[in-house]
Image (cartoon, rainbow, N blue to C red; front, side, top):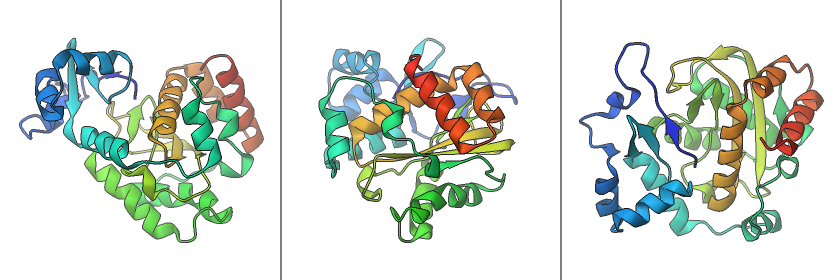
Length: 248
């Protein structure tokens, strides 16, 4: 997961203050103790983008729930399919063309509660029979949201399960949803979320690589604007694959 710099919220103060005093936010030294690693080792992992983190006032900070998620995935995940194994075994960045299909692109997501939005995003998985029952999967996605929102700001959210092993077989798959009106998804910048990337993979490596790629794409306003102007799933697919080929 790439590092994120959190700016001031609209109410004033730093976004990380939401977690202040709760024991949820850890310093580099505290994380090193928590993981029983040397601080230098943790810092190297941070610089390599191997551990979820955020930079606040030039200091690295770590959310305990996200670290716990990361640990669970590292301990338990074994890829179940050939594509995931291929992506893990190669040093190249995961190509979005391997994950995207027209039937997994929604251009008319309606605004609503998190549950209402997630139900819409899950439907392509049901329609393609990757998922038999939608509601249990939606509940697991909501459990993840209750720990910390998967909205990354800049109008983008990347919903995913806390434990990748609980994803449906047949992945990795990326469901793309566009909500033109925007909806509240507890983004760190408190702006509305317009673009959703629902990632389904049982591989921690694939998850982190795709997450990093989507984060890079989210930083390109031209790409985000082209996606919001797209009038068909085919156009969305073209925009994403072209941006991917340009280097995100």
